[in-house]
Image (cartoon, rainbow, N blue to C red; front, top):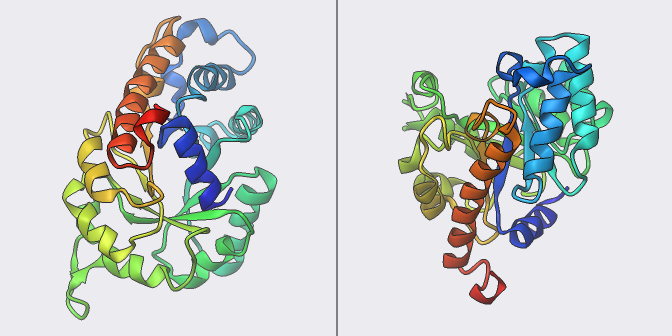
Length: 279
């Protein structure tokens, strides 16, 4: 899926919501545990409840690979069940020497057929370039993440550059990819940075974790982070999929997603990306 198609989906759904499928087996409602594949059954019901309210799904790969072959099978079935109109993101945070990255890219872009994968840039261009070789696929590069540890390196000022490390990463990476195949991860827990980030990368899409359970502010993120193609995919994982833990968990998930989608629709209207008469 390319940038323009994603933008049209945002306009048609009045949403830039990504639902994170961080499906923790220990939090799956007990009435699903006797089924052959509780993880897939959980995901299936979340997707049924939310697919009209979001534009993307982001399985966090760790929650699947921790269960070995069975977890990979749950992931495969989940991907097949997600509607084709959705942008699918493998939250895998891969990045290794070139020949290894090439196989990681093949795994997520060919074998599993994700639209995008998160990639760690620490090892440099040869670890990222193999992911950029796939047509209509997207690298989402870790830039300024939402976790507390982002302060350890990403915000550290580089003496020779006189800018934070994340800024150097973003500027350098734009020499490797283009607007159709390169996005950046920027956490909602750094809302004060979005205005600066839009000066560094004005047109790239940003995948924004940290809304909901991590306390990010959607209004502030949109105010400083939105561009003429919206430019934001805002993820919520636990705040949606674990909004309820009983037999009505899917209904509770829908209510949580709907609340965010309605806020996003208002933001899109006020930004003039969607005309008032369309709502």
